[in-house]
Amino acid sequence: MIMSGSLVSKPVLAAHWIVETTGRVELEREGWSRFHPVPNYTTINPGDLVRPASGVKLKLFCDHGKIEPVLGGETKGINQICPPPRIRISRKIVTPRLLNPYIPYIISPRATSVLTDKPMLRWHDATNANSFMVTVRGRGLNWTQEFSRDQVCQKGICQVVYPGSKRLKPGVSYKLIVETDRNRASTEDSTGGLGFKRIKSDQAKEIQRIAGRIKEQNLPKEFKPLALAELYGDYDLTAKAIEILEGLENDQKIVPIYRLLGDLYRRIGLVVEAKAPYSNAVELATATDHWEELAAAKAGLGEVNYARGNRQEGVSLLEEAKEIYQQFGDRERLEKLEKRLEELK
Image (cartoon, rainbow, N blue to C red; front, side, top):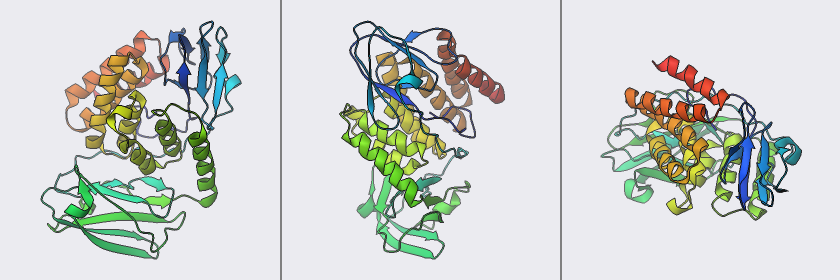
């Protein structure tokens, strides 16, 4: 989870998840003052204690891709149940800029790594444009092709698959550039660090091994895409994670999916795209009483509003998130939000 206000995503351990329970489950996180009841699809971090009530059956999804059962009536540390989690790859969070709707700014791949040599290329459907000249550049590569809006654009987003006629080499920096027939270009977005790289083959094999294990598990259908997106996000495959979550129908999206989608868009500086998923997460978390996800979504939405110039509303949402963490005794997140609010005031 990206912590609101943090300009650098710190190296942290990936999380495990509660994926199935038949009754009351309580959790005490490292840094909490007491146990609290938590709902399904709650993350569990190293150092946390989990306590299912007597007779309750609990299943945890460990981040290495397997399900582990926990007996009711016992208090157990997550370190006793799941193997040590992987370390998430850190990347500087892209500083958001307000982007002109007439610019075909890049949505993906943008400040990310890619898994294959045929990534999906996505950009904003620029106002008044009828056609787009799409270019991928890098060492020894300069691929260009023209597309009409009718061919590739729908619901404000244009997308094509890079054909791979010339392979993307692992470790080489590439950049996607889009120009319109109205003389506007994605290069008008002056944000730095928007290129992408294909990851190395040994790392790709490890990711595909874990992804295969996730797909084989008997997981709830609404959770499986979340687990895959978390995996890809942890390895800096932000574009792939977004592609998975955006491909879901709304009735398949649970609270953490909306919140994670907001986090991923904010990670790459796309605050306009982040607003809707964060707003949906707030609405759904309120209805389902998922207080941790509610606080995280409000904090993310607060950052989005602040970045878009709605500063008072942004600070107000961050204050609401702070109150939730205060109510439940989450000292670590409370301190981070207090520090962030001091920076903004």
